Length: 354
Image (cartoon, rainbow, N blue to C red):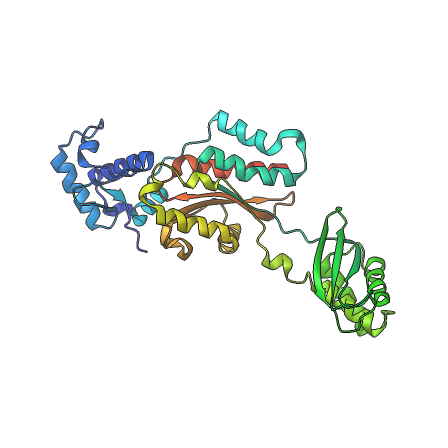
């Protein structure tokens, strides 16, 4: 997408363009020349303003959604405005207080702050709030296999692999068993993992197991060895494939303007429901030095819904980027207010993680 340089606009065109965009972002409705002519400072007739707006439309910065209607900024126009013309509005003292209290109230664990950040941003921005949380590998404390009875006591084709983490979390997976697997093999495999691999992350446990099997140091019979490998493998790709994305405030996306654009809203809600693609988009913002802004079809994910995302990375106590916080909403959102708000939330999370 080619964005018209600001240098190609004369002062009059720049002023009129800025006023059109600001009015559109303020009320979500097309802006006509009469509306602009009534604003202080221009001293131009409606006809003169209309001619300039026509020029801006020919440059691809404005568009007329309906015949005889006012103009709205195109995605190229919004990008030009955001990158080169917008005056940022710092979060108000009240907004700062709401963010800091919402994230740090009670001084609880950082997980609580991360869960709260999406709800706080949603409430302040009237968009959907999103937080991509740090991926933390589970540290093993205990592992066991529970047979699922199929065809007789202690024998079956499946078992429940139960993992207890060092933080007390409990997860389970159903694993397929070789025919004829008995209870003693299940117990032996669970005891081996709990005794020899406790205190390790899953990745470390798989690596150590591989070393011991290669050097034949694992005192396991063939059946138990296969079970240990199956049990650890049941979690092998889980962390990489499961998006760790918290989304709050989807209802904010169905506002007074949604009735005229129900298909766009439906598409956006479907995108949020999937989470996988949104997560990848948010992960892309982890490489950014500062707040990242995605406007409409600049990202193929939003080619149909015409949505915008504002996202900022946050860091741990060692200064490493570990997650992203942001909002998603229609392209008409109040960028000047929401961008600093997202940035301040990211800074607050970074302070809490020190």
